[in-house]
Length: 430
Ligand SMILES: [Zn+2]
Image (cartoon, rainbow, N blue to C red):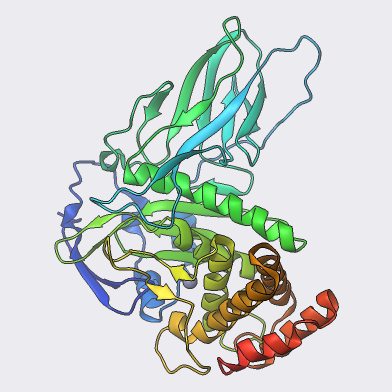
């Protein structure tokens, strides 16, 4: 059988190679999966170098994106008097804490309204807002509402792998599809009521991993916009990709790929689409929106710089220094902790590790600012300095970066934090 083979793949977050059998995939599907047909070389190469930046071939990128739903653009019309409409909130089950959804250890799930979705009513399309609220005009008194996981800024790319999420729950609404491209279908009847909450109630690891993506990305977008002028870019997110224990970002398509739960005999990992991992990958996207890729010629150590900033953005936006909590096992702890003592330059084959002086310096700076100004103001100043320095600086990972950060502080805070920046960054050789 084609699927019965072994992968030798190291986790994106760690150095240790992970060997496990893909034979856990018991595919009775005749469906030939697109993800099975693409080359794993770019993924392996990225993992070897400890970076989550992948550069797929144009052909493979096209193949992956070919399974993104082709949704019409949003058409949100003004309501006219006497026009019929339905409205409500789109909700989903997501992981509320930092823990992943690991076999035998179910994290705390919450129902989150913070999901942008595409809502199709009688062939008219609208989106829910960042807070899950939707409003849709209807032609008839009775009809169907179909809701997809997708939004103006994130297109979810799904494959038909329904055998991996077999226990989709039927709740107040009918969940007609239990595959990754979860879709909700509901009959409305405005003679009865016109308020319909649409609820993605799946509690399967794959279902929750899917809902986590828009949840965390949209929260992160709001977080960035609080501190700097920025327009969210359109990205493609591929949840529940192969069992490769990792997560990746392809800068050429703004494509973010997450592996699904792996239940191998030697190693296994939960789905990688949770809290810090999602924000790390989207963090690459945020930096990419400022820096571009390939990085400008004056940018030193672009991979290391990318990993450092992706970790820092994830850490600041979630208020934790602990990256990839319990990714390797239910009690493994942090895969990386940016509360670290690394000094630039670090001699390592892993970009994630070589980047740690910079993420460590930023984390120390944030801690110092919180000591001075208190939790709220201190973390706000730290986030302002972080986002505006990466927006402005093209120097990459080298001591020159600190000068750029100091000029941002001069412009923004009259240079009030120059000394603590120098201390925090100096401690890490920057
Ligand atoms: Zn990365």
